[in-house]
Image 1: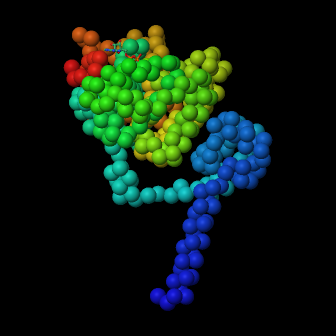
Image 2 (image 1 turned 90 degrees about the horizontal axis):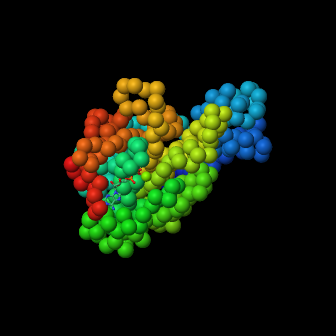
Image 3 (image 1 turned 180 degrees about the horizontal axis):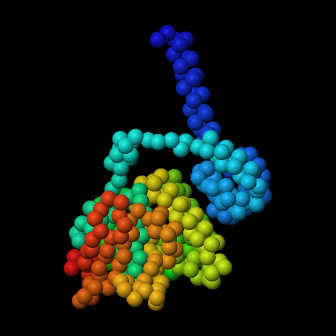
Length: 332
Ligand SMILES: Nc1ncnc2c1ncn2[C@@H]1O[C@H](COP(=O)(O)OP(=O)(O)O)[C@@H](O)[C@H]1O
Ligand SMILES: [Mg+2]
């Protein structure tokens, strides 16, 4: 290729890069018919990105922002035109999945249940009654990731004041790593309400940008604030919208940074269920759909705990039994 041609090709490539970048930077405000007030309403209703508009229904946008149907249709069309919503090949997906890591804390029954450990790049939801071991697993994961990779950092978003440094020290000693270092590599933030909790999830990206090797992000408990703040049937829709937004942010965190997001969830008793387990996870379908792995924890015989895998995309449903001990989580 002649020098001149090369220059032209370079120019074209540069221009295409620019176009790509411009496309990526389109904001909700840039869509036709969206002024500051509409953008604010959309934001409040959980439409925080052009993608969220692109995949919305006309009715959804009308309800959320009060614009007319025609405007909503144009907004969605413009959002879609600006998105790269195409297909990728199975090979691309396969290659992306090669980067997935399995995080373990040395309990082989649980590892086997999960196909080798807790997956990065996904959300694992653990739900179960009080005392079933959800918080213990959170601490064990915060240490386990560091056993596998000494530079690993765990982020602990603590909503119920259940983070205990002693448990990190105990598990670190049990795993034979330096307890002081293990503690330093857990970044804890207490979330005082649901908005604060959502904000903290958005800040995880900043830690990664600062150069921290974040491997695990824990939200314990995912639903407690939402449950406490939105009481009564009338507030259910708002609660679910906010929870939906939070789950999508967590999915983004998991996906963009290849981290394991581990969230805990309470169960509410459903006294009208006579057969099977009369409990259901809070947050309903919204939490369930965003979570790739769902584990139901309960107390088993002889002080053991039983984990049951529910609705996994690629693993057989099954159960694992283990004990919660002071320095580890051990096979039953
Ligand atoms: N220091 C400890 N040594 C041994 N077991 C512990 C210790 N701390 C907590 N546990 C066990 O963990 C249980 C509490 O589990 P936890 O994860 O807090 O439940 P939840 O599902 O409510 O988060 C306790 O009932 C006990 O069996
Ligand atoms: Mg707990």
